[in-house]
Structures are given as C-alpha cells and as structure tokens.
Length: 113
Length: 114
Image (cartoon, rainbow over all chains, first blue to last red; front, side):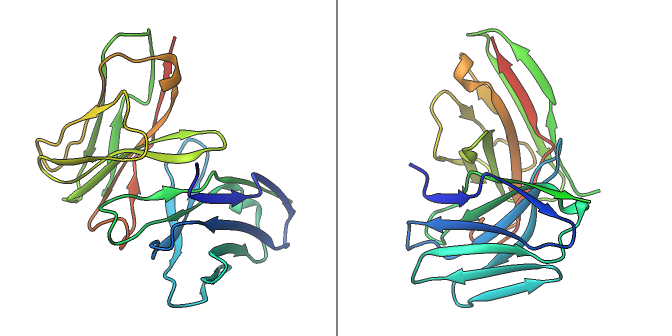
C-alpha cells in the first residue's frame, strides 16, 4: 500500500503551458515534502521541497502548493519547456522515521515544442 | 566533483548467483540508502544507514543485505537473486536525515535476473 499516491502517471503539455502534478499522503507524521526530477539514464535530483508550516513555495518556474487539511500537495511548472521533459517524483518523510523517504509512483512529463 | 558512484551500471545474472552492487560517496555523508525503482511504484527504500555499522530496514528489505564498514561505502548484497529482483537500483547519500535535507543519488544500476 503506497503511502504517497501520485497522479497522473503521464502528462503531455505544450511548450509554454502549465504542468500540474498532484500527490496525496496518508501519514500525518510526514513533515517534509520534496520533489525530485529524473532525466533518462540519471539518478533523481532534488528540485524543490516544502514543510507543512507554509502553503506555497516558489522557486523560479516551479511552485509547490500544500494543503495540510486535505493531506495533498502539488507541483506546478509554469511556462513549461521541452527541457522540463523528465520523470517527477513527490516524496515525504518525517523526523521520527530515521532516514526513511517515501516516494510517489512518478509522473512522466513530456513538453511538446 | 561531489558524487555518488555505483558499480556496475548494468548487470545480467542468473537466479541464485550471489552478487554485490557497490556504492561509494566522496562527500563525507553519514546517511546512505538503497532504493529500487519499478514502473508505477516509484522508488522504494530497501535499506538505509545512519552511520558506520548502523543500518536499518526500509520498506522492501526482503532478499537484500547491506553493510557499512566504512563511511564512504555502502554495498548492496543479493545472496540468492530471483527474477522479481530485476529492477533499477539507486544508492543515495545525505549529510543529514532525509527529513531535513537533499539526497544525492548515484547513476543507477540496472539489474536483470534470469
């Protein structure tokens, strides 16, 4: 049973459009929510992360929105570019979980020129 | 260059033949982890280590062993591989626990067990 559910599994967006990826979690002890970006043949790399004491965090074209009461968070990619084409993973962790990090199933994003 | 290095990158083996995937980091990180990546399931944590000689199970530890005898190395051992362990494996390291910091991943090891 996945503790972090991610949707959609795949997403096609036109260049310049907005890409939106959603995640939902079950464990209310989670208190750190990172997003990782993975290009083909590479390991994941941290993109942006948020803690539940804020509802939104923005870094350039990437924004995380966080809804603590709904136990949901999402990644918005504004002005999507072909170079953003990659697989995106949401994840969650908690301070009392040792070194555990729980990932969602991943979203394969393709941005068409 | 700061990096996590895994070897080999690709491996095809037969059922039951013991194998080791090596992982080494040059960032002096205390925390290291192993994950397997399968389509639709994301990355699932196999084992993690919080320091030399300190290891603990992740979500899917069955069929795997690890050791942490030196800070920089964290090998993954499959004593008797089975076809359901065919997967893409990643090693990761971090300066602090993963609830507080970024994980740095290796390039991955694609394992096929026939």
